[in-house]
Image (cartoon, rainbow, N blue to C red; front, side, top):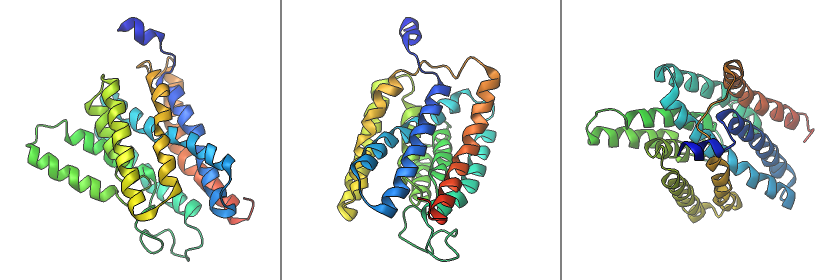
Length: 253
């Protein structure tokens, strides 16, 4: 097993950079698509963007077991979920009046805040299922978390993936089974009422399987680089959305 892990070439930092690049391309394509309409090149880019969520959920599940303080980890995620909310709404919900930063005042019930909200609650969900609570309380807490995350980007998929990755840690095939099962069920539920092309694109999360397979279980060799990339991602997420929103606001996209 140790020899097999040593043969794998991607550490947590590299996975994080892959997620950042795929996310940026995906969000730019998302905005361009909404303004200028469908193009096959945008479709390809959005498929590449399916790498991002599984990697982010996978790394948060890994972080749950490595962090020195789960409480501080959760607090950090929720803090940046609040910050990211305003950048997300500015990027993707312009044109809905001056109160478009406030959830549920425009559009439908989905996409009312960023995926960071679901990621933060996903850590809590995994934490709940690692307590000694009675299964009834775990079920009720899980149901509440799923309900709370429905309005976020990707809805309850993010917390469910984090739970699946964390509970099946060390069993890669099971992790990938639950990845495909959760996303594909969500896709077909979405198709039942929206007939969205985007829902079909989400089926392509399978492209992340060979990428995650190459994870070697290490965060990175440099402590300084590890610390830099941790904060870089937190800051980059709202910043890149704000920049894309500015380009859209000034008609440069």
